[in-house]
Length: 305
Image 1 (cartoon, rainbow, N blue to C red):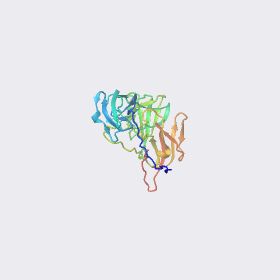
Image 2: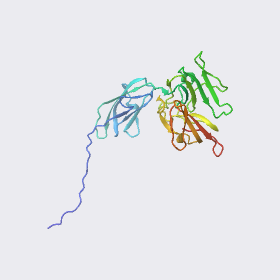
Image 3: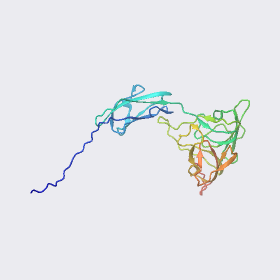
Image 4: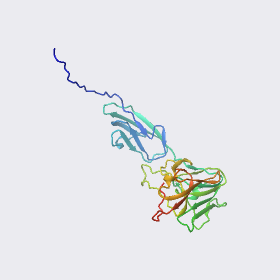
């Protein structure tokens, strides 16, 4: 009898790809954005050749850019408020052609930031710079009659106070160092006679078409008590209601030598301590009193949120 043939055999396996590519667009279909010059992304999750691409009816195929043939980007510019439509069709490496896919999104006006206030004194801040920082443009609620800032870098004259003139309805500085605008990074005592939230238009984070790059936010400090604001460096919580947690005291004040800090509960009429090491929450809209001491070399670094 002959010996059995024990030689191994091999097989070649082929995958038959008959699935057409599927497009996922950003901004999402039926979604919204407040950016007027957004990047419009067409993601097919596989290598494709673009057969057709139009934006608002205009052929933009030649304007698409990609680094991997999977994700294609169109840079839209100066879009009007309202609905915009991208239509695309692609073919993958196996020759599967997608259906003509339509994705629509809306450009909407950027919402205001709503700073919660209660009748009486409030320790507050804004998480980004106002579009129009003039104090009369920020505190438009006529029930707000006094605003106070504290500048620890000028210990000889730290207070800056502005009161509303009842005749003109405009704020007038009543201290040697005037208070004429409202900025991110600073805390403010604000007195009001009602419970109306103050809506403020804040600057949006730099978009793809920004003329200059984003900057690192720093808050200068002085020796002793500083009255600072809670800045949202992500920009994600600079619209809508205040009171959103964006950091904690230990992270926020990590660049300085701090020992004590307080926010103010305007409803309970009492200061709330932020215990060092307890990761106490810092919320948008809060003004924070923090005690800062010099470093070992005598320097007073800025707070870097």
